[in-house]
Length: 79
Image 1: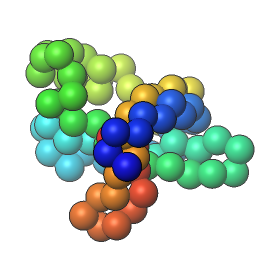
Image 2: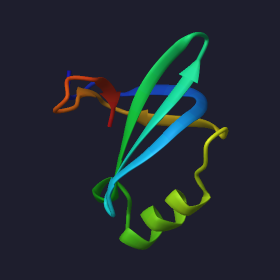
Image 3: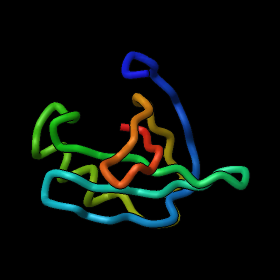
């Protein structure tokens, strides 16, 4: 469903940096855990991506909008 856009929110449980341009985060809400994929290419600039990642921390309540996808490990995610 590449054209489907979802908006989800929750509390950040974990943040994993795969590289300087790719970050995975797990969010939790109402008993459901969901992974979000944050890529520098989805931000207007590399600087904005870095600034967002520097203010983003475990325990934050966030809302994200994106398309559902599966990672190479097969985990359902929002990109």
